[in-house]
Each structure stands twice: as C-alpha cells, then as structure tokens.
Length: 294
Picture 1 (cartoon, one colour):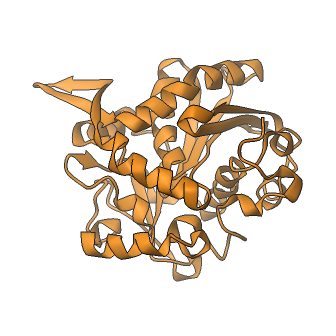
Picture 2: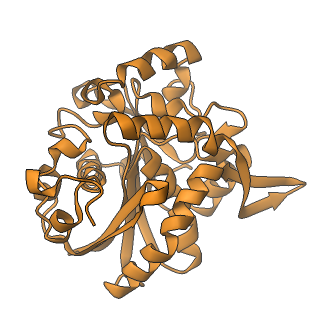
C-alpha cells in the first residue's frame, strides 16, 4: 500500500491508540464515555454500543465522534487473554481458509481461520449497531490492537462491500492476517484508504504467524521503541527488511517471554511516552473494569 508519507499523523495515531484501549473497558463506562484516560483523551464520543461474543473472546464497540463514526476492536488483556491470543496465533489462525477477495491463476486469497471466525461472530452485530446510530453513510474509521487489529482488517473488506464509507484506519501490534495473495489484493483494493499498521520492534505479535505463507498488509509505521526515538514509514511491501522485517525468530522467542508481565511487554506499550499508560484494562476507571460486563 503506497499511502503518502505525509498522510501519517502521530497525533491522530494517538487518538486511535486511546480508542483501541477503550475497547478493553466495560459496557457501562463505554456507553457513558467515562472509561478513564482512553475516553478522556478522545472527547465527544456519543451513541456508543458494544458488540460481544464471549465464546470467541471477540469484542468491539461502535460510536460517533463529531466528524466521524468509529469501530474499535479489542485486543488481549492480562496474562490469560495473552495466552489465548498466542494459542489463536499458533493454532486456529495458522489454518488458512479462503477469503472472497481475489482469485487469480489458481491462487486464492486466504486468511487465518481463527481471525475469520472471530470477525464473523461480531459482523452482524457491528453492521446493525452502525446503522442504528446513523453510521450507514457517515465517514467511518476502524482501529484495533493485536487480535483486534486483525479483525479490523477483515472489517474493512466486509464493510466496504456493504457500502459503508471507510475513511481511515490505524492498527497497533497487528499480526499477519492472511497469505501474500490476500495482502496484494487488500493493498490494491484499498490503495486510496489511509491505512497505517503501527509496529514496535519489541512487540512479538507483529512477527506472528510466521512469514510464508502469511504476509503483512498495508503501510507499516515502525517504532524502535519510545515515540521520542521517532518512527519510520516503511516501503509498503508489508515485509520491509529495514522495519519489523529485520527481526529473526530467535529474537521473537525472547520477546514472548517478556510478555508474561503485560506492563513490560512491547505489545502493550504503543506510542509511549506520548501516550499515557499501557494498553491494558487496568487503565480503565475502577467502575468500568471488567471486560466481561454485559
């Protein structure tokens, strides 16, 4: 995806990082938009509705800002959820299944089965909620963290087909979603959509599932660590060797061990210190915590 370098805004990325984190908070706090720093830093949200499938551990919310509608998918939270994420990446999502985006010369677009199952579990509820809050034609931005970022990718394809007005997407710590054919087809289909896949060098999730047949999509924005160290807009191939593509499998194993303590895990530390706090539910207000609140 050859998104213009000038289109990336770290200030806008911060807003989307907070929106991704807000998805970790409970329904009551989201609906009142009183969930702690994630809500405080993106004021003006209205008509919030949460969509859940507890059997798949899949969660999202929709809402309206003054200038756009938002769809945000939840990522992993805490050690138990982190273990579930790794199992999904290693097992369910390694099983590639056909995805109706392309077919050419006997090659087919394929995505991780676990990602597709989780998205399908939320899809109808998301579309219904978006239409009910008046987001059927309004500008719509999509975000997500970790597994939620993978679901955000599938949502862009699905919602575009149903004529929702996709405008922007920022994802954080996104795993590889599908094969190289899927990545190529996605990048062609959404060449004009500002889609930024933000990565950190110390986030093990961005290196999973392994490359080949999986392949990354979109414009990678690579941070070596803290925002004070700057960022790099990568070459658009999805696997730029000067960005996250430079890390080998041995380093990934060490990064995984760090994530036993979520606060020490690069996957939970996106855009720090410009962004205050980690991408964990402990950042939600006390009354808002509890990812399984109805």
